[in-house]
Image (cartoon, rainbow, N blue to C red):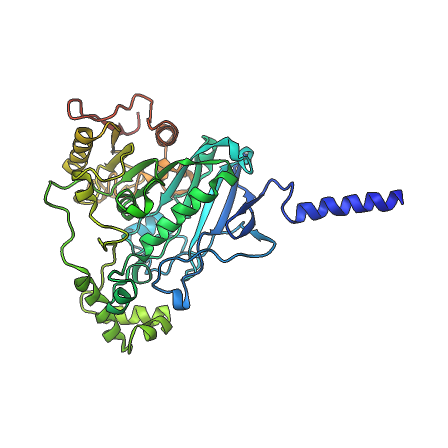
Length: 454
């Protein structure tokens, strides 16, 4: 009998471990239990490919994200999820050589996944209340994904900030406008990728305690189209109350008053979808939903001028533009960090960033911190004419502390700059202040933090 009791006790213990009890790598989230893995850093746990919504396939193509589908048992989250269907970058092109030379992960419409990097000691400790940062990748709303070679959360978690990186629908799958979709949507269509971001943000708010995070201290940040997405998120009524701080990297600033609204109405945007339907010979929206992604891409390729996909003011997700919201002071009243690189793309820095800081200072007591990244990454030996300088996206290696993944011969000074930037970014998430001598910018005392090697 004693032996039987011992065997029974062991069986109960093993059963508890198998269903997630007493397992430090297992947490309960919307949909069920998930098991993470120890990251490359021994003191960080990462949960990869966590679903935050139902797969947007079949009848859910071009619809707002739906609640996650529950699963049984413990879901393995040791591998990154699919990335959104996208065109990618041509082999040999500048950005292919910088960031995508190792190829692209599997693409699928089933792409609504996120990744959580947390200090190992905070998992399953809801009282830890660590600050949280949610990263929105760039890529012109056409390309990109949450686990690009530059992007990693180990250094963030080691500094006491939980990092969440998200995938969302891109291009044709994320931002198609069409008359039938507009009718379905009660007068609006085309912002599915932004609705994905809001759904991911809501998921983080509702579930981050399981990882030791504070749902009331979420910083949203992004670069390029990711920064433009952040501008939409702090404008949207649907994300109101979910964002405590925001960082806008190479996403522009503020246009002069009276400029920056979006021309045209929904009917103008819908003509794009009608053109794709006609080019592909699709009878109606039902036929387009039944088509394969390759068939849809082929239809787009027939259009003489191609297609540009991006969010627009649809009256629901966005009732006004970011510029309008800043000028009328309806934008999220939170601390901001904003900046660009020295050789950034046109219109993403300079006066527009200064104007944003000045207008916010005139309307709000919340601080704005400006930066200017001017480190020319080493490794360009084709002469000054071929040196791209501090190009668009070059700061990503530094603020994710992933310089060792690049082909460039980064120096000790580059790693020291990366450490400083990591401290600035994570301090902002913790304290709404980058600290380290970085001062807020005001109209009377404008200040821009220069980011360069010493």
